[in-house]
Amino acid sequence: MTVAVTPDAFKKTLLTLLFSLGISLRFFSQPEVLALIAELSRKLGVSLNGDNIKKLVLDDMKAKRNS
Image 1 (cartoon, one colour):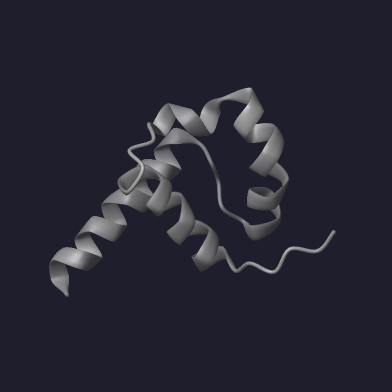
Image 2 (cartoon, rainbow, N blue to C red):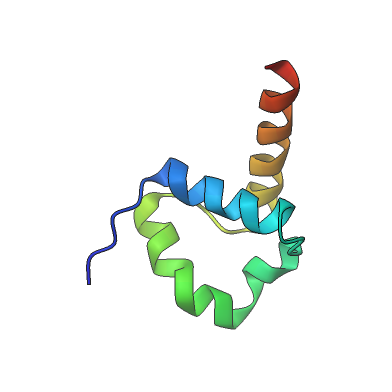
């Protein structure tokens, strides 16, 4: 199966899950979630560890504040 997604689109979707749906950061450390998206995140070079996701959120907030 081929999935056409860019790293930026993947990150944007992660942010949507967090902000729009109110999903907890812990969601991304659940074994079931990792089983579904860990390979995709690895191939896109997007780490799903808590620190990386927090940084992604903070960077997005800073970008929105500065625009």
